[in-house]
Length: 149
Image (cartoon, rainbow, N blue to C red; front, side, top):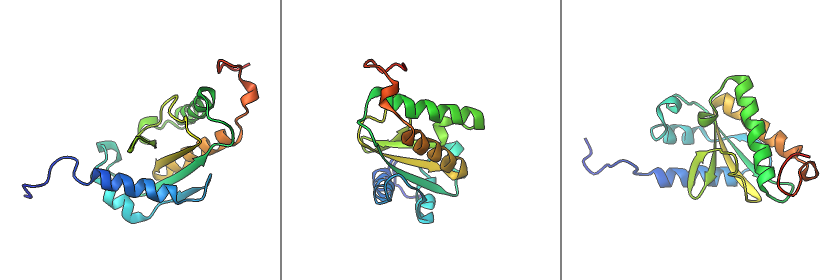
């Protein structure tokens, strides 16, 4: 046993590798990440994700100005697709924020670019849902308070 190893060793380094890999992707294209990243990250994932074999990335560049309505639109389309596909939204796609990959939540996309990480084929499908939601977002469909007109 390595007595120097503690919980969290290399998590920041692996997170940065993932974020850098996704940031280097073409904007608004879903791509499979290097298989070495899957192997490197597997040990640091929650139990339901330890069997991943493929990671996908999406560098989403918003076509319109970020807003609460915009973020809510993306998230609601994602949740709806997860429900229809009967996949867990908490273990299908994550979002890079504040140096961490965290659960994609209702108002978490408030910058002009977002880095998403998808797990296995379900993750790739849900990244496509998020991308399509972005491509079909129209701010004119919402009032000043962010409610659908």
